[in-house]
Length: 267
Figure (cartoon, rainbow, N blue to C red):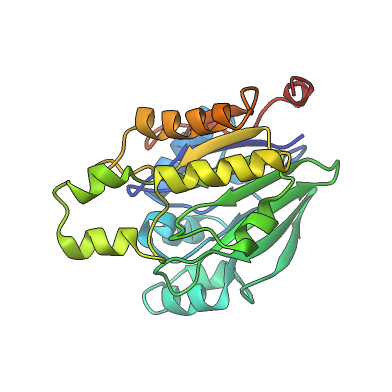
């Protein structure tokens, strides 16, 4: 079975660790290389064991550790052409490890198979990933999305585990201190997903077989872990999915993001 941790999650930095058997990979590498190394140590591993890094998009909170990691380690960095082109303008070391892909691509990494799908966001390109192990376990990752498309839903259908964005509480954002242009950006079709929209998506995915959700990329200013959790928890309970597990990623420490193999027998 796949084991995954959100090492840290939010506007301060994003990094997800995924392990299956002897295969260990990262999805994104935000914050700093030192932060990534410390977080990996907290879950009992290190950068020396990472066989590949997969990038969702080029925003700094998802790639800020890549330059130093690329300088220190020869780890393949799988990235779409638009994001690589943007990063290459200011990067010195990432290119030497970069493996360039078209936007929608498939790639094997040891015992894991990854398929990308398009996510609407105000980046030059953003993708999510569906990860399948050679024993059939599945993990979906979808964050930094302004709205939920049919492609996103269909790409996540049937994933046993899903890490999904629950960025903001709409009232906290609208009545908060952010300037109007930033509020408009976050609320736009290419911004970030609200708690309410996330709760609708998790119910749709639970109906298609997902048994474990981790809510990620929470805003520090316009959300709380409690608000995100209870919005999706109440929606799941109302839809009859009381036995579906729900967790919340942390901005600063590792959180398990996959259910144990036995958990699917609860449903």
